[in-house]
Length: 191
Image 1 (cartoon, rainbow, N blue to C red):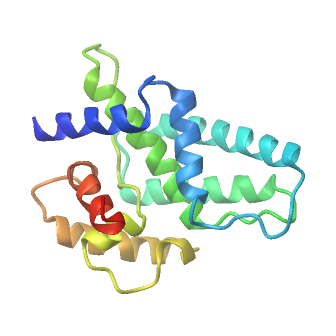
Image 2: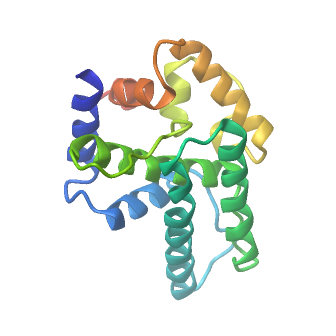
């Protein structure tokens, strides 16, 4: 019951409308809030176009998670998000693995929380990783490379393995993160 309660709290805080559009917006904003992706000034229309494209890519890639996939496949999806965005970006935009994993994982977190509230018989999304950011890394006392500097799957997996070791084998990373996120946020912000 604790996981369901925390999922509902998360949605009440970040997506009261329970909408996919809001989930996309929250996911992209979470990945760029403290993680620079614009190298030099950019036309606001180009930035808006890019964020729309990013949202479509997240929606497309998340569909794979309605069936059971392994960690390697999930990491390949993260790399595909990065590559597709960079292939379609203006030269003054640079997406790293950190942007791709955070945006995809936050979007999936929203969908996973939506699914927990639904009693429909439709397939449920199955998160592979939790979003990796300073809040989660702070919870485990991480002293290595910050999440915002990660630009390889190898580095991303170093974070995941450390989180997994800290969380223990009794829970999924997604469950551990949703239960502990607010505690980590309070610790970081002092609220």
